[in-house]
Image (cartoon, rainbow, N blue to C red; front, side):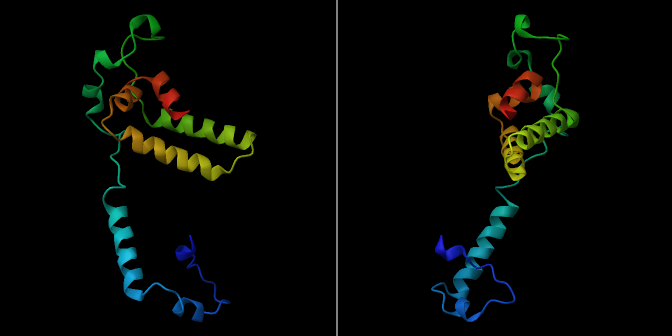
Amino acid sequence: MPGLTMIMTPEQDYASLLSSSISIGEVADRLAAMQHQESTPYRCRDYIDNDNETTMCSPSLRRPRQQQRGPQEHQIIDRDCRLKMCEWCYQVSDFCKFQRETVAIGMDYLDRFLSTSSPRAIRALCDKKEFQLVAM
């Protein structure tokens, strides 16, 4: 995108900015719109510390008993589960020689998804196996 190459270093000539087809007012409007987007729709709720998670994990959202492993009660995702999944993703990324930023972006997408009220997201918050599948 040629209109978004505004990164300048001290060595560069600032006259090229003045010859740009974008007016200063338009740049100010775009920056204001980006700041507004960052402060509103991009925010997501803290799904780990949310007290409603225990009430959201109804028996109908859990796997059938024959598929459950371990205790019969639901296993709500906590900080440790998220941390372990994040560390595992970084290990896979390092092993495959991917950029580590890919994991950061993926975890951001995961957090945004789990912050929604989607039935699949709620199910993933109530079941560690579902959480692992969603994270992968």
